[in-house]
Length: 241
Image 1 (cartoon, rainbow, N blue to C red):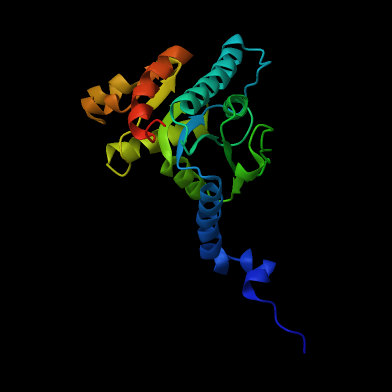
Image 2: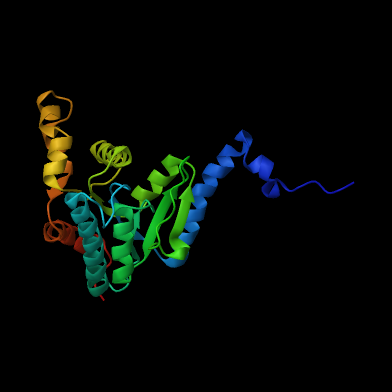
């Protein structure tokens, strides 16, 4: 009689409903292991549309792409110059658009470039600017969300669609309810965000508290965003060496 397959070598079992808990645990343990191996302890996370490019026909979208790349580059260079033993990386959802731009900026700065991709029916291909050892693909959105938030020292939201909005409101909810310690949440492109989300109306109707609008800040330029991020990162990254 042939030997039976070991459970952890049986693809049929591992991909079955019975092994869902194993798969969820793997999506916690595998990134944890790889990030520790590389020494990543802190991240700045970039969110935004996957549908724009540096050659976008819309000039505003082209501008956002270039600003995301430059902001990631400037953050990376500042951390390198001021916090040598930083354990720091730029993190994105790993796809095209704003995600590609931020990973590209990280690569240009020479800091770790992390991509937390997600398997989708219409496959999202990892962009070319993610470090090979920091290229992850998740099945479960909630495990991907966990890793976005767990090491984040700041989160930057460029204009985007449902996915960007989902991550923004999850972040704000976690901070509002005390499940996540406060951190800078930068909404890049004030006019876009003010036109897209009517936060004053939410306050007026009593759906959120007046102080809840202090959970985020707007920025319209790379310099303005850096001015809001640097003091926080100075306090929350390792001391200078």
